[in-house]
Image (tube, rainbow over all chains, first blue to last red; front, side, top):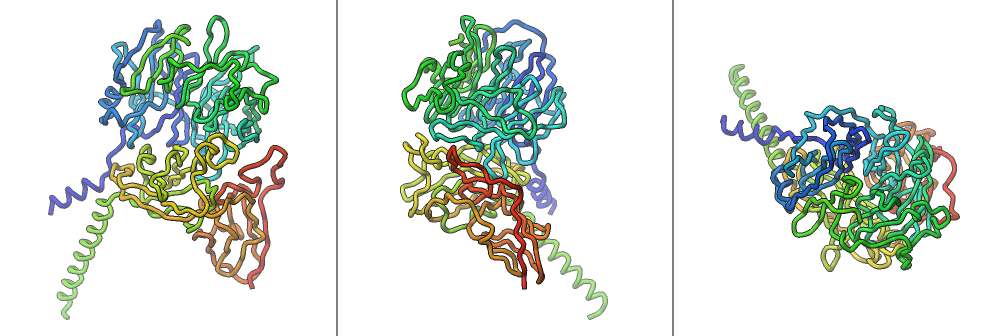
Length: 333
Length: 248
């Protein structure tokens, strides 16, 4: 009888997951606070880090899949990196990993030996802000008026939202609807959330650059993300079929700004003149579906790159797909 | 029967009941999560159906849904059928799955090249393979739903066509299940949603039906706007949709 009771107890007591979050985006502010988007909890966290300032060093993990699998108690083919960021002071690489076939995320920091150190949720000092009911975050950036979070609605309706949360992370979350022009579709969309975002500074203004599943790259004024307002963005490039953006980042090359965009299809560099474009927007935006490529270049050497983060003035850390998923340091394109 | 016999009888009954309860709990726990519903429940869906909801019997872990989900037609699994973004609600018990919007909206290169996911006149089957894990790590038994595809729906729903009676309301077309659960009230009460029927007893007299205009039909057309709008189209003005009706 006691054996039966033990067996029943074994089934009846659920295993406790290590960390109850699913981290789809990581972003540091200039002081080294790490902001993370938890898709499962519909919330964002501000995590205090204790990294010391250090020079950037090259990072390389040849078999990131195996390293993650070991840390997550899974198989190399079943693990996935959902987000990547570089600490602005220590230049340490942070990433969130998960077993694709189930399981919550684990936050990792890559140490000096190129190993993954897990950062258990319970050990982190953090503050949390919940998004409005039903909103699932997709990405976040740090803007001039606070943290800007893109989300979609997960329980009903097909809506695209942008949230603004004052920093240090406040409880009050402002929510705006976003509207963008879809070049291929020739229509304004309120139902296309920004999958990936980055920020761009120009003339003392901060812009958000973002992209949706249906492949336009858009620009909006970060200061326009205000509670209960509709934010209308300007579409600057239509990347074309299959180019749902995975990562966006702005960098400076030869004193000129460039936007780097990766998708499942390819990686593109987009010149600063396109980012600043005031006339050729929306209906007139550069449309790769029509063969228009002025200022937009396909980076053949970056074809295998899925995610990246700027390491310093001369290099990115990238995650490459392939037979083995790897983490590498590569020069700015 | 003596009082002692009665006590013995009750004792045996209690032991049997406890054993039955224990075995039932054990069986439920051992079998893991099950699919309790797939929405929409319609046998025929519009060609531009936007989403499915899959309800599970217990909270799910998440992260493994698209390794277990597939849409199958007469030729086998349909490639690139879904927008692979897991959208969980109801405490991880409900998964919302979008059919890839890039293959629904007309004029997109993706839709033009790949074609629509669902094709009018054909039959499909949504399959959830066994093995999806609950939050406690147990593997589920899976589920499936077959349906046929009708013509595309590009019109906004119309509350004036809903049939109201003492037993509840019959809506004029299949509407979004989660939306019906949350966006419709009668005299301030939410009905029980059973397919196209909104069940709640209504006494003779006047009643007020209130619908949040964000309620959508199966193709994402709401009371505010159609799913696919042209640049010249404007949203419907005003707030909630209200209709007064009398039950005799």
